[in-house]
Image (tube, rainbow, N blue to C red; front, top):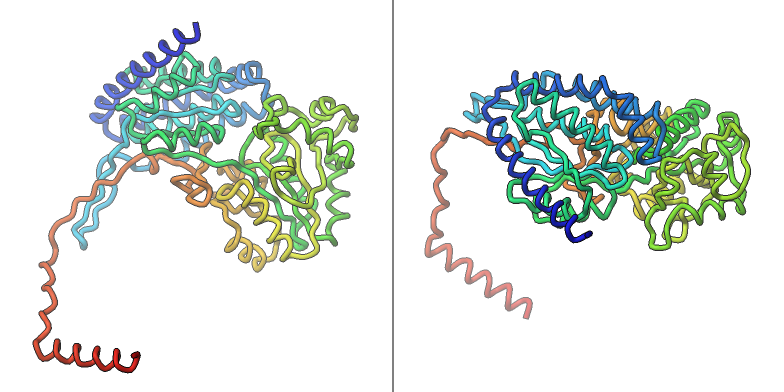
Amino acid sequence: MEFDKDLAARQEARTLAKQAQEARRQLAGMDQARLDAVVEAAAAAFAREARALAELAVKETGFGNVPDKITKNRFAAETVAKAIRGMKTVGILNKDEKARLWEIAVPVGVIAAIVPSTNPTSTVCYKTLIALKTGSAIVFSPHPKAAGCTREAARILAEAAEQAGAPKGAVSCLSIPALAGCQELMAAPQVRLILATGGPGMVKAAYSSGKPAIGVGAGNGPAYIHHSADVAKAMECILRSKTFDNGTVCASEQSIVVEKPLEGQVLEEGRRLGFYFMDSREAGRLGKLLFRPTGGLDPRIVGRTALELAEMAGFSVPPQTRILVAREQEAGPTRPYTMEKLCPVLALFVMDSEDAVLEKSMEVLTYEGSGHTFAIHAREERVIRRFAEKIPVSRFLVNTPAALGGIGATTGLFPALTLGCGAVGGSSSSNNISPMDLINIRRVAWGTRTEEAAPPEPKAADSQLVELLTEKILERLG
């Protein structure tokens, strides 16, 4: 019975939360070196299984492709591990002898982690490493469509961590992929933070749980190709980004915006690279498949190739087609191509001026995607600075594939698979979430100065003068 499944899911969530709390107490006794050894062991074990987990994820979900999922898994295991190697996250972080102030890292405690179906294994590794780095325990809630591969990823990491000295329960995963279990986990008294990566409904639930939460918003980033750009290189960047794991990275470009004089060159370079610019009939057919009548993205199109999408929509494209492009003019609920599309599909806006490009980019992001990501391809620092000061995003990427630049693979951003959108995007953080987002800072402060004296009471003569001036002002006003 469904009711029995829900009860079992809730009970499992309570059990794992209690185990995680006990593990957290034991992790508190481990110094930085011991925690780092656990992190390295977990990362190495996951890296060895990168291919097998990628194959399992694609087989179970049908999203993306194996080569890019291997890249994601190795990114989570190797690039993230390298970035946090040597990072101080335990004990005294800083001593300011002049101010007589110490800063001590305090782990947040037990973390409830929501995992998306688009990145069901790499996200588990990434979140595990940044949690263990701080001495926090973590419990995963898998997406029902990806429960098997997420559980397997968590098992590999948990076993490796325990063999390296971590307590049992430091890493765990719900085995029953039910909403009731996820809700119970988020509400568990042992949980101190929710780390939510997933759809808007789940992220909203995390923020509505009454617990501190770090969530993400929708990605819907435009890519502006300025007339000073290397257009061929810009289009190659967009191709690499938008086809990476068949468009399932939320930081990937969702539209291209250009000025009218550049349109011909963009079309020419695009066709050379496998961009297919749909006519209005084809765009209409595909547009009907992208979203459900209720407004949510149709999961049948997520992570599919351009060839598969065209076939589903009932029209033919050349066999070398990599990305489908629809011309657009406005953004809004009746314009499906101006929303986040987790597949190799783009909108194309052709504008009359740089000012119009800025206005259109703001319009698109205001409708969906505020706080997430924007990409620009330009050589002129003037235009880069102008747009960077106006565009409401947390990641403003210059001359790089947005999907890879946004997660920190091709930029100096922290390598992460949870990308905060800041207050403008409804998120509690604008960071690429790192271990430093999973600690609190305890400040130890010595007294260094005496209490400042209160200002003297006004003299009677001063009070009389104030009253007299007030009367004069009121007389003039009257």
